[in-house]
Length: 158
Image (tube, rainbow, N blue to C red; front, side):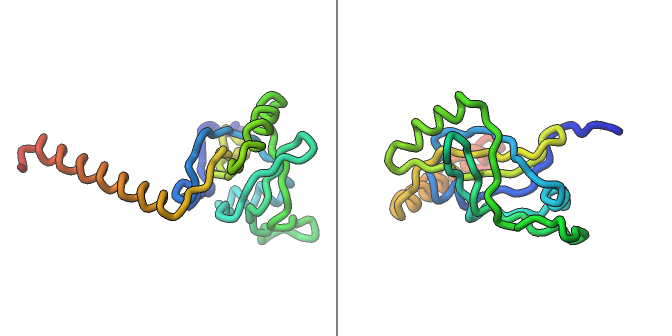
């Protein structure tokens, strides 16, 4: 049997980059059941309501929806069950220290297979206020406009 290589994305949480200021990211493995893996291989998952929580020295992922496997039987999984994240002890300690700060939370950014293993990119993030979101949008638009103008100048169009 040939072993998988590379990265295959399953789901991304684009809304998280808009709603939160991302301070740092961590890659974590997922402890899954068989039907969850089969459902993920079919490319079905939703991260929008997901969040991470540290409980008793372990990191758990809540609110991530992995639908039931259609060909599954009584062994099917619960779609929104809490899933354990696999991290090293020193990474967990560092995250515990950071999440005790006011306003920091763990948010899943993407779910993917890396070399055959299910992984989640978890971000340590701070929530944005409404005016901060508008400011970030304005910055992004101005950056795009300057890139567009410099590109046109390089091509000799202006």
